[in-house]
Amino acid sequence: MKALIIGGTGTISTAVVHRLIEKNWEVYVLNRGSRNNSLPDKVHTVIADINDEKAVSEKLNGMRFDTVCEFIGFVPEQIQRDIRLFEGITDQYIFISSASAYHKPSRSYIINEGTAMANPYWEYSRNKIACEEILMKKYRESGFPVTIVRPSHTYDERSVPLGVHGKNGSWQVIERIRNEKPVIIQGDGTSLWTLTFNTDFAVGFAGLMGNPHAIGEAFQITSDETLTWNQIYETIAQALGVKLHPYHVSSDFLHSVGPDYDYDGSLTGDKSVSVVFDNSKLKRIVPEFCPKISFSEGVRISLEYVLSHPECQVKDPEFDTWCDKVINSLEEAKKKFI
Image 1 (cartoon, one colour):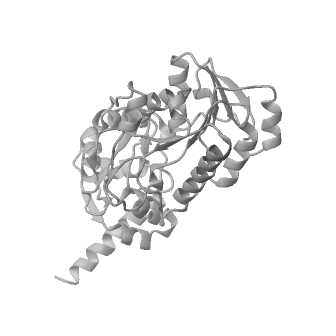
Image 2 (cartoon, one colour):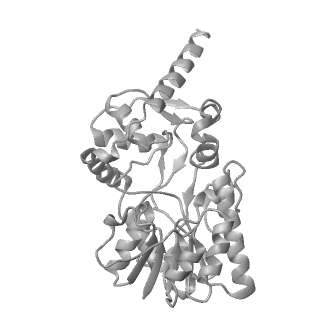
Image 3 (cartoon, helix red, strand yellow):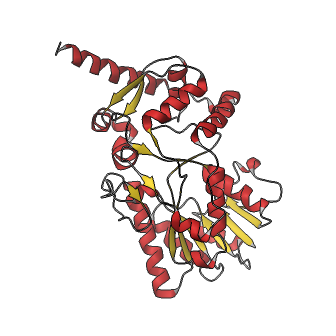
């Protein structure tokens, strides 16, 4: 079986590439070549910018694939481009959408593929919905062999998953936890969330590739473990061997005072809403999908890697100062009522 992976070096796609090599797929990765040192030796690389449609068409001239996987498609124009590029040269096109596209808040906290799609808070999610609509219309009208995959919060060893962080990722929050400074958690920390380690995700994803039952269908791929955000942060602190000092702040307030961090989308439109994912549809056609890495295990893997790799330790003093300002302002406001 022969696959083309568009991207191939991100959190999700890296694990998928490794899984496919283990399953003896012939794997081609199309990207600009800046991070390909993380790829297995058996991978074939196609160096091109997917946004340069003419160059990509020339590079792929005469090639055919069992499955093409689009990991870096975010807006409808990119999907229209992909249809032009890959129609007729692949038996399956897998589009990576997002579980954030589900209605926020949903009428039920249990989410499956039939849950309504709508997110008034996050343009990223609305664009993913628009991409899905284009692809399913193309499938209905001309049989374009699409499969849609909706990941939720997937992480790997290179980053610790969090709710509230700055533009430089999770490291500054890890530093606050290690130094036992107050750490902002959105809401009261009791909303439910699901975190999936990328190698577990890859098992489900690879099982959809080349699977005739996946054509014309959408699937979510997540862990079966559900935690509150308080439990998530407590687990991180325990793995670091320190006491957590949580500071709960409403998502609305964080959005109001942190316009540079897009908390309206990432919190109100995603992480502040309780979700429990029902993966039974995926398990019916990919029976080997059975997530094995609990968050308590996964976060220890991530912390061990991050703490031993300085390149993952990107400081964010601006965000650190902002956290202190938010906390101090709320503490001062409390004093006015004492």
